[in-house]
Image (spheres, rainbow, N blue to C red):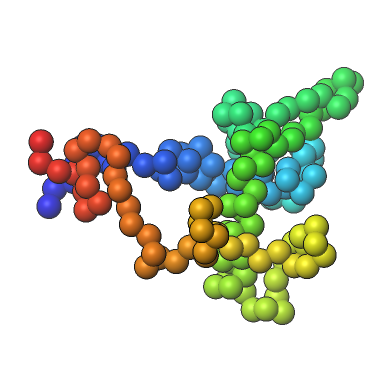
Length: 156
């Protein structure tokens, strides 16, 4: 089967085009942890300064982070998450939990996140309507873009 000229329209692909670049989610992790100054980001992420500056500019332009000066001489900036950035935090927590489960031993987790209730956060995706945990076998996709089905493009 030949590849189609245009891939499936997809919000996952759109989101990854923005936050899927190397270091972007790590920038968001650090900013959500309260480490929003450039030198903190360089130290905690290990990204080259020029690449980090590019990622920060892109995240600010996309409305995921805000940038504000905290020093005039020399001019230095601090980054904070916007509402859109904060909405990505559960994605980070879920990704971290997946990494802990599949890539690390229980005794070798680099960070534990505590919920306000005092217990360790274990993120679970649930249905907003019924409250049940989301399981693969309970899901059904309904493509909304004309010309596309679950299996791919339909004949024109």
